[in-house]
Image (tube, rainbow, N blue to C red; front, side, top):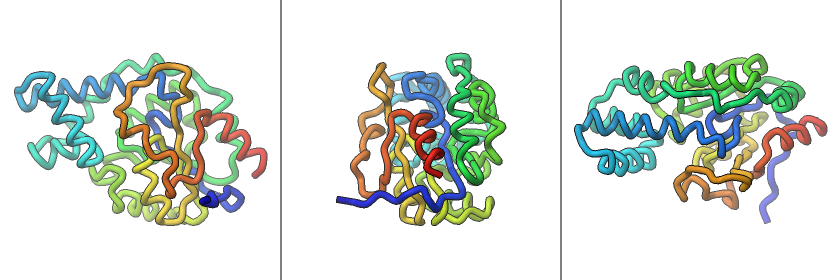
Length: 231
């Protein structure tokens, strides 16, 4: 039996954005996913079906479809990000309980996302929790290298002066917690609560029993409330 790392020493709390700070079943990312497919189809002048295969292949191989499209086809990040994040954020609802739980955590709170700052700002505004975060480290700050690339986490830690051994990382993809755990972070995997259907690839939902996952929750707000109460 593995012994999960505790939160007693944590002074920096790092959160992924999509499908982490809001429930999977909102399926907001499904809109982005559809826009990515449209972009790939138009850029490569192929059918939607062919684009879907390439989109998912690049996502899995490169960490993001964008990285694959840049590497394989010379796509410019600005064009890609502007198109795929042009979505309707209205399904997101304010979550004051989560905001209160985050506020109660001792220390700094940061966001580390493969999305753009514009998208993150829109999500945080809809959730009403943006005031609790010191900064957003996005795909541009990462020099277009997405998680789970090791250099992305290392650049994040350097840029924001974060000590991984006193930090916790919250993510919805287990593979994005491998490097944080190796660096010494306490890791938390946020999974669907099972109440509603979610649009995810099978591999995206794997890994909850992995050695690099210290904690698993399907209720982030409740989880943070318990951690904050103990801290």
